[in-house]
Length: 157
Image (tube, rainbow, N blue to C red; front, side, top):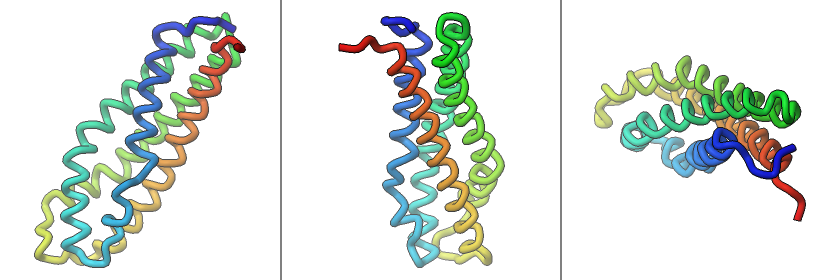
C-alpha cells in the first residue's frame, strides 16, 4: 500500500469520476422518454452532439489510465491493481456496449427529421434505454473500483 498515488492512479481517479458524472446522473432521461417522436428526436440529436465528443474521450482515457495504474501497482499492491483492472474492464464493457447498441442507433437518429415519424422508433428507443441502464451500472462499478483502489492508497488520518 502506498501513501502517494502514482500519476496513472491519480489520472484514473479523476477520469473515472468525470466519466461517472457524465453518464450516471442521466439528466436527460425524462426528455428521452417523451411520448412524442419530435420531442424524443430533438432531445437525442442535441444530447448526441455533446456526448459523441465527450464520452469516447473520457472512456478511452479512463480505460487506459486504469490499465496503466493496474500495471504499475501489480507488484506493490496486487489488490489495488486488481481493483483498477476491474474498473478498467467495466469501462471496456461499457465501450463495447456503446459501440454495439448506441452508436448504430444514434447514427440513424441523426438522419431523422423530428417532424416525420419513423416506424419502429419506440422499439429502438426501448433497446437504447435498456442498454443505457447497463452502461450506467458499468460506470458505477468502474467508479466503485477506482474508489476502492484509491482508498487503499490513502493513508488513515
